[in-house]
Structures are given as C-alpha cells and as structure tokens.
Image (cartoon, rainbow, N blue to C red; front, top):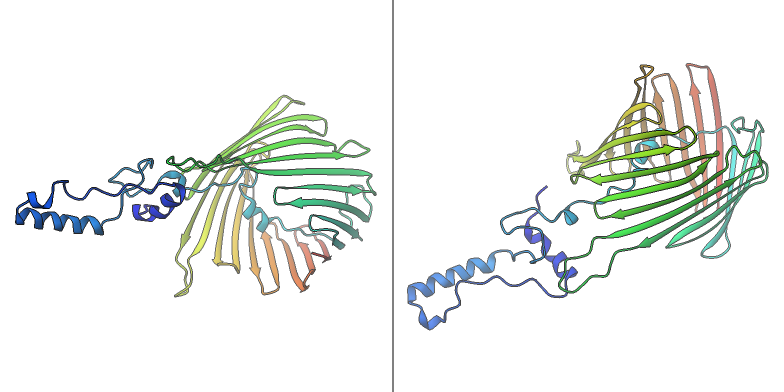
Length: 380
C-alpha cells in the first residue's frame, strides 16, 4: 500500500504552477571559508543530496519521513451505493426471456436517435398479453441523457433525464489540487392509466474524492419515499456504505449496509497478468436478507466466475448461485446455476457491425418449467 514519495513528483508538478522548493545542500557558507576536509565533507553531502528524491510539496499532507501518499492520491472513488454490487448482479441476474425480441435503433443525428422495440410470443408480460411494442426517443451528449419511452399497448409513458456536471473548483496557483467533485442529477416520470406503476422521482448524486453521497425523493405507486445513501473508500481495497429509506405510506424506516473488498492475486499461468477478485457483503432490511458474494476474474478480459449466497434470517431459507461469463472474439456466453437446479444461459454474438443476435434459455428442473427465446438488435 505504501508508495515512494518520488512517485508523487510528476503529480505535484502538474497540479501547481510553482515547482516544489529544492532541498538545501549542506550549509550556506562560502567555499573559501572552509578547510579542505570540511570542503570534501560538504561535497560528499551534496552528492548524496543530489541523488536523493526531492521533498514533497509544502502543501502535501505527507510528512518528511513517511512513504505514504496523500489519501486523495491513494484512494479512488468507490462509485454509488446504488451500483454497489452491480458487477455481481450483472453475472447472476441474466436477461432471460421467452419469445422473440427485436430492437431496431436509428440515429437521426449525432445526438438524437430512436428505437423501435418488439416483443412477440411471450408469456412474461404483466397484463397477460403475448406481444408488446415500445417506441423510445433519446437525446444524449457528453453532459447527460434525455429519454422518453412510449408503450401504446399499456398506454404508459416513461421519461428520464440524467445530467452530469463537473463541480471541481479551479486550481489556484500555489495551493494543493482541489478535490474532484462531480454531480449527477436524475429525474424519472412514469404515467399509466391504471396508476399502479406511476412514479415521480428525483435523485442527486455527489461524487467527491473518496466517497459518494446520494439522495432520492419522490412518489412511487402513491407512496412518498425519501432515501439517503453513502459509500466511502476506507482503504484502497475496502469500501463501506449504507442506505436509509423512509416510506411515508406505512411510516416505515428501512436500512441497508454493505462492504466490498477488492484485491489481486497472482495468475496460475506463468507470465500472465494477475487476476482481480472482489468480495461483497450486504444486509438489506428491505428484503430482509443477508447476501455474500465472491467475484473473480480468472483471465482478464475473457473469463469471470462468481458465486452468491442469500440467507433470510426470518425464514431460515438460503439460496446459492454460481455464475460464469466467457467473452469470445465476437460474442459473450453467460451461465448461472442455483441450488434449486435452475439453469440460465445467454449467448450473444455480433453477426456484423451494428447487428447482434442473442439466444437465451432457462431450465428449472425443480419445477419442471422451461423457456427459451432469441433476440435481434440492429442499428448503432
């Protein structure tokens, strides 16, 4: 975890207009005031000082006898608590469906695009129908996204706005580098005739240095919701966080806490790059369950494996799931198996630039239920 002070010199020179002061070599007396022995001693000290690394800037939090870099340079931002376990969820919660899905995307300008989405021959829609069509219009640039989704079948409209702003103050000459700040504002509106899925929600997320603070307020299905979440990098490898939520409809206060540890281990193959791993632990009062997960990159950029354990203390029920992700040259294969004998798999391949085909299937041997589907996506 320690970093030599010499490695901080390029960053200090880039962040300040004035370079760090040079070390004082020996004393300040004139050479002709010294005896030959004293002059030889002074020259030897000067040679040692010239080969030594320069001291840190005066505004650095590193002491002269410490090898540790400032926390802002050593730790990284852990992201938001909402995406706390997104890596393991992506591996364990596969997008398995039945029937046929077709998505046709058409960019009308560099910033504006539309998507036509069809879902045919399915039994997974909440309203019991076997087909669905949705139209999506999206405007996106480097600062955010505005999206509107129209579902004529269910007569529902969904709108989302995401805006990202860099709030880092400008650097001041002679002062330490400012802490990076980034604010993300989100707004969501969902309207339907039945009112069961109506939603009006506002989120704001502030990423600052080694932590992220997020707040949410709005109404979902007629209930006012207020939540606050915080995630902090405690060490370069460990992040701790939690979320508190208040639901006004039933006057309930719920909480969730979690920890994530990331590290690397040497590869089993000689000459290969070290592989990374992540350990997750989370307790959610909303779901009333404790979950623990382990994710490992066996081959960087190619093979990822993981396992997850969910325990419900109230019912003493537990489920375990194992997952595998293999990235191919022109596609990706994902598979999960749980303790109840349910197997899910997805295979995604790129047929040509702008065209992607997906095959998926689920076999629940415990319930004797099976479903299969495929999809086609066209457009950039």
